[in-house]
Length: 138
Image (cartoon, rainbow, N blue to C red; front, side, top):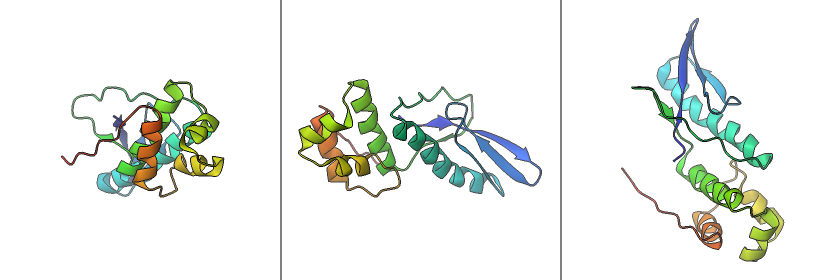
């Protein structure tokens, strides 16, 4: 759902990572493996700018043949899914707080990608929006 194609470019002795769909996310690594590992953090940081600005998340483009993709961690994907459901339904944070019986700082922490929210809180927010979270190991 949040698999974003990455562009890997050899830049002198490092590998530069950029995202066409999330231009705010830029990083590098000493080699491809390190660059892809750093790309997860860069992507999460880039997507957090959209959440902080209350803008819709960029839609991942279709990767080219054999192009690598990167996705945020599972917890962040769940948070982003709830954020995307909230914005697509035109629901504001205050309304979500009212539906959940929470205070606004609790909702703010829910959408802070650096905060380790509990999965049951994210699930409660999804349910308040008429959505469900499914976890799958592949």
